Every structure is written in structure tokens, then in C-alpha cells.
Length: 144
Image (cartoon, rainbow, N blue to C red):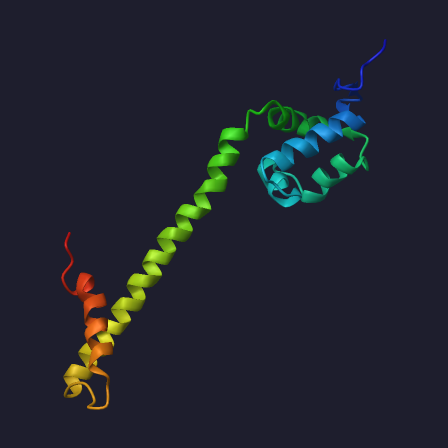
């Protein structure tokens, strides 16, 4: 029986990594901007397993990993992978907004403390404090 180089060849419960299959795996991983570590995590494997597959250091894929590999190569995981890649950006933006709000709250508390102590020291630049109060305005009087 003759197998082409593009086929996944069953061998003792797994598949053989032909040079073409390894290239396809690498191209797919790179197209989705995944490094070995991220792809390994997505597939539930150690990153060195993915690297060894691509580098030809492993001749065959174990049966337990066969479905994961086929799903990845067939594009069945693409939507989830892309969604996960976008998700950190949303968290970073939310974190930046939260950090900004915390910073502004700390400044507001310091200004209130200065007022409680008897006001702002005479050597403080009024323009700085005016700008600071303008910046704090959304916190002092939230519009929502």
C-alpha cells in the first residue's frame, strides 16, 4: 500500500509526522501567531511536544493526542484561538482604566487630606492644582 507524503499514516495507534505534515503544522501555528508554548497550552500538551513534532524529533503522534492535532490542523480550533488572542487586550484596557481611576482617587484623597490640614501649602502652584481638580472632576461628580 502506497501513501502520499500529505497523508496522515496510521502507525501503532498514532500518526507519522511526514515532512509535509510538519510543515503544515508549523505554517498553521505561525499563521495563528502562536509560539510553541501557546499552542501546547491550547492542545493540553507540553510545549516541547509541539516543537518535537515540527522538528521531526518525534516520528508519530500518540493516539491520545490525535484528535487534538487533527482539530487544530482542520481549523476547528481557529475561532477559539483568535478569541483568546483578543481577550487579553480587553483585560489590559480594563486594567488600565481601573489603574487610572485608582490613581485619580488617591490624588483626590490627598487633596481632601490637604484641605483637612488647613489647605494647600502657599508654595503650591495654583495652575497645577486647578488642572488636578479638573482631572478629578469626573470622580468627584460622576455622570452616571
